[in-house]
Image 1 (spheres, one colour):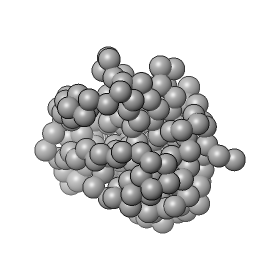
Image 2: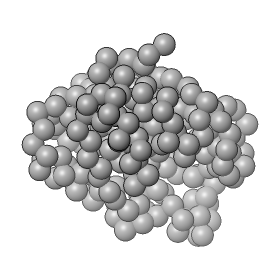
Image 3: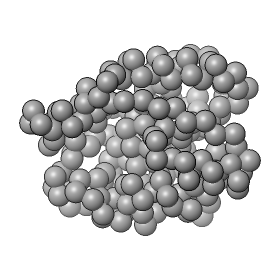
Length: 197
């Protein structure tokens, strides 16, 4: 799992589904994406897990996608991306147009968030994407996002080609980390390979 704010999410998935959850911490300002992925690969190797599920929020979801694209020999499992702009992030693109914005995003944010990508699920691992549509946050103002969004990322920006399932919930970009519905749906996907309808 990614992101320091995932404590409640991890506790709920541990309680409801019995998952052993470990948090991987990184800095988008102090490291490049390649460095983060290399550290994440080492972190996973130390775990020695026979089965490995991955959950990443926002930029963390893009790090998960990069890990899956670049790493071989990972233990089998599924992945859930929470509010991850797998296509693009218009808000990040607008921020990256200024020196201050690039400083806010850090090198990893600029490389992974602020350019259009052609990411797709490889089929080797089931991937589910959860998007939010509660417009709470400045991202939709900065990015001039008119379509359905979570306050930072448009729902359309979370649609990953080849993903096993996609779900929209009434949560904001940050709020999804604290949502019981999100933790339930993420755990359900990791167990079943689909979201609960």
